[in-house]
Structure formats: C-alpha cells, structure tokens
Image 1 (tube, one colour):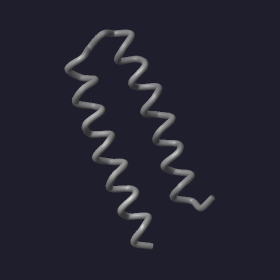
Image 2: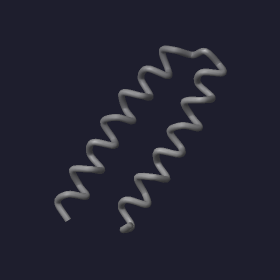
Image 3: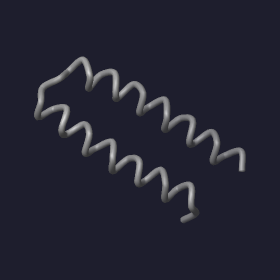
Length: 52
C-alpha cells in the first residue's frame, strides 16, 4: 500500500464519521451536498494516483 492509498483510506474514514454525524442531526441537505463533494474528491484522488 502506497502513501496515496493510505491517504484515501483515511479520507474515507473521515467521510464516514461526518456522514454519521449528519445522519444523527438529520441535516439531509448538508448530507447530500457533502456526499457529492466527497465523491468528486475521491474521483480526483484516484485520477491523481493513476497519473503517478
């Protein structure tokens, strides 16, 4: 496992924590916006990792 993969895993863990908090608060607008941003960030990370 290289550094970038490790970072992606850490980001995924953080995402899950934030999503759980969002669900507890039932703030669906925030949750939806956050998930869209998260997916975009993950795609950017994967694209960046592939270029190396």
